[in-house]
Image (cartoon, rainbow, N blue to C red; front, side, top):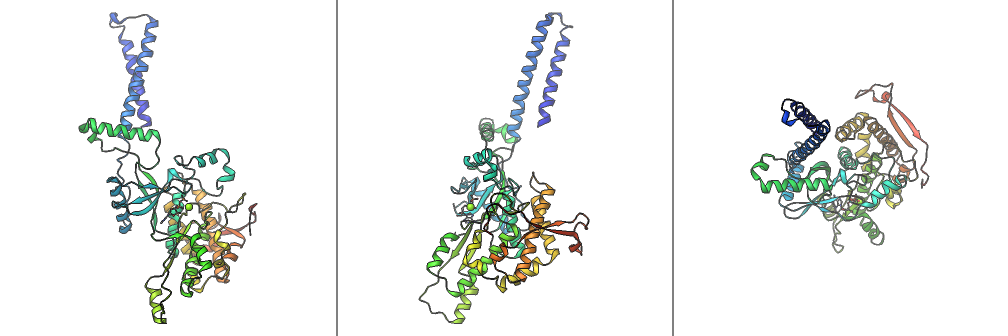
Length: 455
Ligand SMILES: Nc1ncnc2c1ncn2[C@@H]1O[C@H](COP(=O)(O)OP(=O)(O)O)[C@@H](O)[C@H]1O
Ligand SMILES: [Mg+2]
């Protein structure tokens, strides 16, 4: 498209020149030198204008189809593919995603054609520092005081990858606390678009109505699809803050308390590995179905009730501010807010240790995890290999600490107090996946502490 404009301009100027040369052959066209220059300028302007019009027309019809079906392929996950198809069909039928009013960016509840919410979509372009963020306060922060509000340790505008990456880590570690999240393309009138995109789309629709025969030939009509993270919507959950207050006054029965503790430890592991910088108690949800107090369950019944389906479950949502490329060392420490809870003061349970330790103490597993994240992160147009390597160095350091903490029987609170470490790929060591991975990395302790730090 870029070159097309210049080709047209070139052709225009050549035509002008030929026209002026031809004047000498036809004396009736002979005019003074002054008029020749005038005529030349006029022809140039005319042709520029004409080519500009052509370019506009061309770009009207060379946008996007407004359909995303061919952009979303999940061959390895037909269930997820089916959910995305339902979302696309709903949008086609006019059941449009709805912006979530709270929150710092453009996040949307996506529905099926019956209006039931099935997912949460967060487009890259509407992230806190994305160019189409609908909240003007973030724009103000970015322009006026980025050091106080921004997170200098995070790769900007890749929150959607962090969301999908958190699910990848959760899935690989077998934690099961992050609702399924993948990178998806969607298009909807309710998303935030620039005035130019909207004008283009209106023009295309107008053309379709007025000259359907011509417009139908251009099957590329509509607003441009947006890439973002799509997380499955979990039903029956409330913010953790709400339940934590309740549990203080109305303690959980012993079985449920244990189940909650186990779920909580999984959340801790996820956050620690991905070094989440935004885990307030509003960014994890809890579903709790209180069992009837009057029931006097026998041991057998209790066992059945627990194995049938647990009554308490945690969902770790809003994972868009994780995977830093360096440990926070500026004004703010971005602590894990769960560290002050009573659940964080007891050592990790044997169940959690048995689940996680065999995986994270295997260097091939860690290498695999890094490679899977690479496949995901490299799809972003702003991907930078060196920055990604730094992100992985931080993550490997977190994994190293976590392994030690689990082996030593530490609590989550003790874990977050451990000295921060980065494990870098050694420049002299062998690259890639090899048997003696231990020779390929060097570890460094990170001594710079955040100005405001509670540990
Ligand atoms: N997967 C989900 N399932 C159910 N509700 C969700 C889910 N994700 C987000 N929400 C709801 O939407 C709200 C805002 O989502 P969040 O991911 O925190 O967005 P933001 O990045 O704007 O803070 C949450 O407080 C929660 O109530
Ligand atoms: Mg949030």
